[in-house]
Image 1 (tube, rainbow, N blue to C red):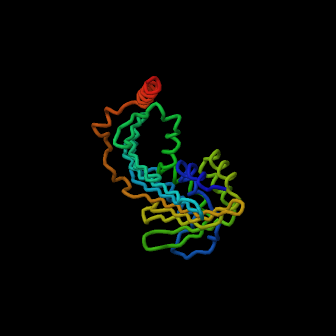
Image 2: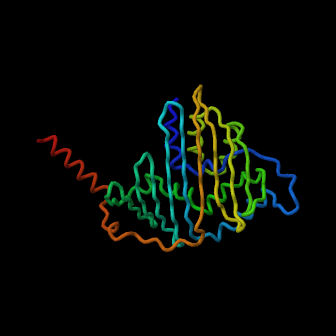
Image 3: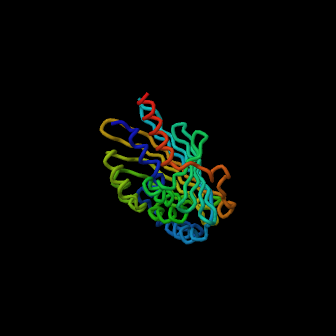
Length: 265
């Protein structure tokens, strides 16, 4: 199996993998340490007060004999829910602004108006997966993880022993179609994940290190999600040049006309 097919799934479902794992024993705990269940509940309760934030999401998938796949997505969200994304995949960089139903992107030095493609590209779904409050809701499976109190908060750790563990708990993300496709591409999953929560009951980071197996081939996957600048992101404004972005439909027409002209000559 070629593991590169997995890359397309990971880009839009980074946070799907933040809701996977199997239960750890949290029954024994020190008197001054919260249970993992309480840590998650406090985190989710606090999430409604998060109005702006920055998140970085990194995915690295590597398999022997195949080129490593790396995806990076950095996103700022302000109090008006305007989002600015910086994406880097296969050395292709793109800046995207999403403001309500308007979406403009800068690629190869050119601004493009992609507003008409928001639904087709399922951007709303992808942004919801990166949304702080909605992401916090997918972390319920960590209630069964092993909790450890650290200087700046808590660490919740669990191990993924098999695909069944992953499937059961990844359902919390709500990405059932992507999960179904993912399951068909992988026979076995093992690994571990660590969720860090700070003293203010805010997500600090989530890291997954997993080994994927299909037939006799294996791939290693690392996912790293961080949140910071909680309620400290200034208002995001579209750059002046972005306001004159050319509509994708017009660009497609121009490209089609140019191609027809070349064929005619």
